[in-house]
Image 1 (cartoon, rainbow, N blue to C red):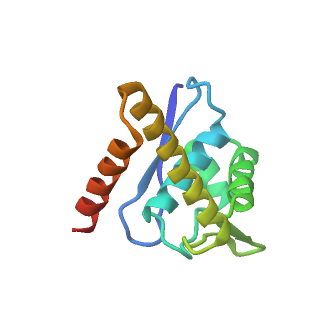
Image 2 (cartoon, helix red, strand yellow):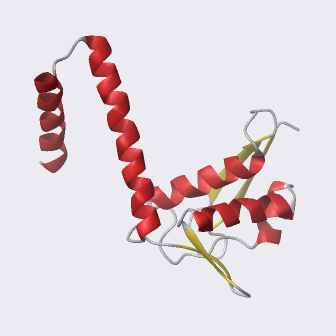
Image 3 (cartoon, rainbow, N blue to C red):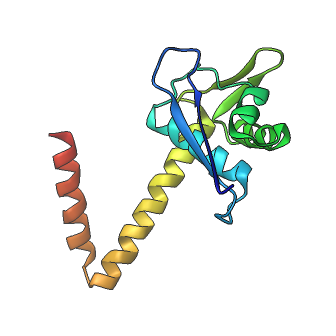
Length: 143
């Protein structure tokens, strides 16, 4: 078995399910694949603030993985500020306003800017040319 996928998120909310795709040949640990996909869904707004994630057992059963694997993914998501585990009630997505979520978003922006600066250096752009490109992109985004 190479891939496991399941329409498990949002099954109780009447929304289109988000598919989680897990590969056991990718070289990336399964808990990390799960964590990264849920994190991306929260950051993109695909999973809303306060929305419950599937129970540990439901997700493990749907993806045919260990409950311990799902537990590790959920625990790390909580440590990184993406979800809140409420004893006896489940795991809920936090909003973008949480401090840890904001730090993650800032880190994503920094990584993107570092990549842009590196590409600009390779292309031989000056700082002013790079700033000009950023200004144009910001204008396009705002207007």
